Amino acid sequence: MSDELEELRKKTERGDRNDEIRSEADSAFVDELVDAIEAVDSGARPKTVAVRDQPVAALLAALDEDDAEMTAVGNALESSLGRERSEEFDRSEIVRLAVRVGLETATPEKSEQLSDAVGRHAQRNL
Amino acid sequence: MAVSTNRAATFLDKGGTGKTTSAAHLGVALAETGEDVLLIDLAGKQGDLAKHFGVWSDVQTEIDADDDWPNISTVFAEEWDQIASKLGDAAVDSLIVETDEGVDLIPAHPGLDSLDADLGNIDDARERYSRLERFLDEYIDGRYDTVLIDLPGLTNNVTYNGLWATRNVVAPVEMGPFESEQATALERDLEKIDDQFGVDVDLAMILPNKVDTRTKLATEYLEGFGEEYEGAIAPEHVPASQDIRNAADEGRTVFALEEPSTTAERAREAFLESAAKLQQRLGESR
Image (tube, rainbow over all chains, first blue to last red; front, side):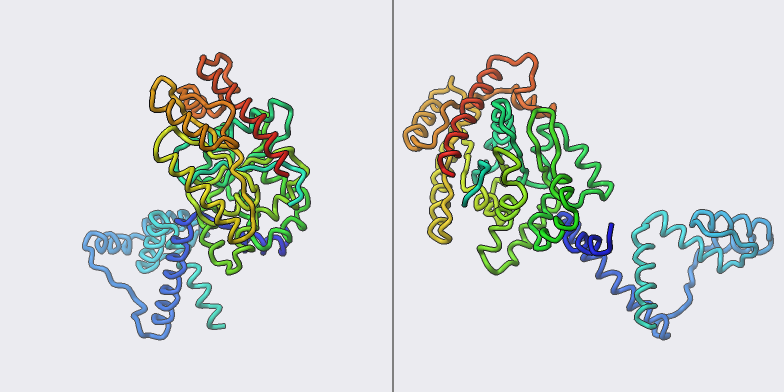
């Protein structure tokens, strides 16, 4: 499809009322996400995340003592996200990947909105 | 309006009176007499007319696969001419679905749901109500002998587009007091459209539907409608028939039944006679 036709399609494509309400809400949330990224970037909001979960803390501690297990878990998470395999992991990397796998599995639309927001924030700060 | 294609819309400002069933059966009845017929479903995103011909699942598959553009809601867009010019014949061809019963169909689309509100944003009333007419004039006229449009069971901007474009209403009515009032209200609305815009929309046919002549009340209403709408009443009433509903559930009209019951046979006859009369009236009104 030519660019001009694609543009016409975007302009005239319409869903039902529910789609429109949903897309308005989605767009509003991406705006909130861009603001939050800005706040984190500027230091107004913290850049780190701390969670209190004893079993998970224990798992991470055990993985930290066993490189082979740590790499297996890390590679499994990467595979789930369709990423290339790394050779070394630390606890932070495992947690980052696990959170993303969780979001991608449970609410893929939130992952997509986060990607959109990161992109829009980057464009805004070119 | 100089058109070479007969046009009519099934409409009454009330749900469940048999608009979709009437559009489907009158369309097939006309096709049985050799007419090229196009049905257009503006009645709502649920796609009942396409379901009536068993083709909705294909339409739904295209919608799910995001392969549903352009569609009927697109022809109302300001950019339609540009789209049609870019796509050529494919623009209109891609809207049309062939059915097994000799009629072509432009099915409904979920976009009809939000179309009404967007049409409401067009300040100029003539522009707001004439988008469909322009589409039919420029892209459909001449391709078919008759276009029948199934309209929503309520008066909104999409409905007005359908009335404006066809200038002829077929109103299926059940035999009851509410329908009698609705038919009167419809006549008033058509007069208002004429007063406000100089657009003359005729009540081409009152089609008594789901009539159970075993009840005295139904017979009385049938006679009452006949007297009140002498020039518009259909030549035959459509009998109440479970076969019509069953056939619709199976994705076909009673014309496609291999072993029709007596009431289904009578329904066929009623639609055939009414279609012939409608054809005559539409031809006279052009």
